[in-house]
Length: 59
Image (cartoon, rainbow, N blue to C red; front, side, top):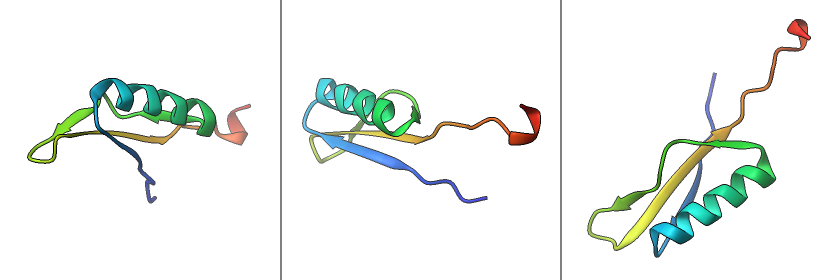
């Protein structure tokens, strides 16, 4: 199974957190931890993956 990653690249940690939350809410994603500083780039990177959906058989 292939996983798709969605990313936010921002100038500040606060903006990365804000935009990651927005992206997760709008696209039904789950964040992969807190944003991390990108060494040497003066930017912040945050990632998310699609939220797990329950199996249709288990409903």
